[in-house]
Length: 150
Picture 1 (cartoon, one colour):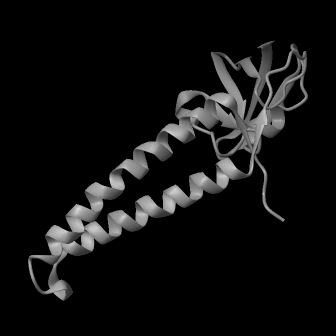
Picture 2 (picture 1 turned 60 degrees about the vertical axis):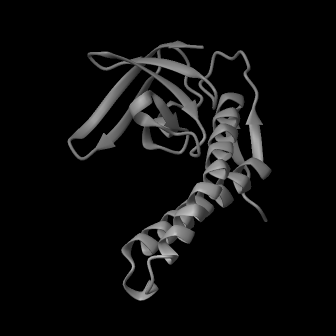
């Protein structure tokens, strides 16, 4: 059974753009490999090894993105007073933080996108404004109070 990936419409568009960009790099990488082959002995050719490694990374990421898009379950925006995947949640714990709850594929904590499978994401799911969510971190427990959901 294939895994269904939960992604937002914006996440799907970002993945499609990344896929297009990666596919456009194939020719450039093939040229690097061909050029490196011309240097002679491949067993001690750092340029060839580097180009082949880059090709492997790009092809691996292309396959990963294609699999995600093929098995994507697009999260529909919906109005709800409870936190769900696709919600933007404002929380306070001394300071105010705003997080968008997304599937694991789109998670980017540094940009405020947290996975519904992360400790904070799990703690926030199905909560309403005014509820608290407590997570355990290496530094101890942190409690967040939900101030808004959109």
